[in-house]
Amino acid sequence: MISVLDYQQYREFLRDYYLDAKKRGTGFTYARFSSNAGIRSPNYMKLVIDGQKNLTPNNIVRFSKALGLKENESDYFEALVYFNQSKNVLEREYFQERMNRVKTRSGGG
Image (cartoon, rainbow, N blue to C red; front, top):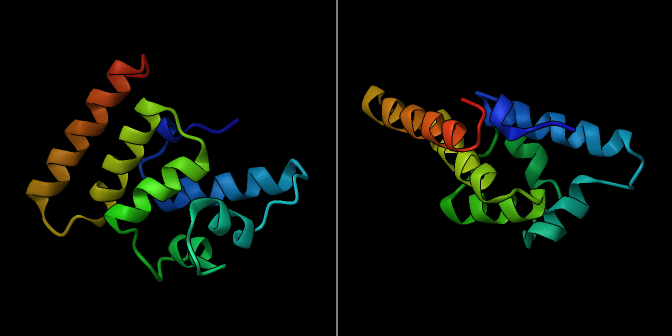
């Protein structure tokens, strides 16, 4: 089972999550994920993985729920998305520190 806490790139995590779900033979599809996340676009996850779309604050929450992330994992995922989508060094440093705090809190630091 993959853990978001092992990732520095949220798109890689989402890609691996998707591939893992497909491998388990659960009938998992991009459309099913979108439906579970309450997102109308059936291929939104693919667009995010491919770097064609960024996650909005609202969709970070939707993805966290659809991914079944626990509280600490959700906190890490949110910080990871903001870290990866940051436009400047100050923001990146802030979210990197936040990711490190969550990992430490989770026993993974």
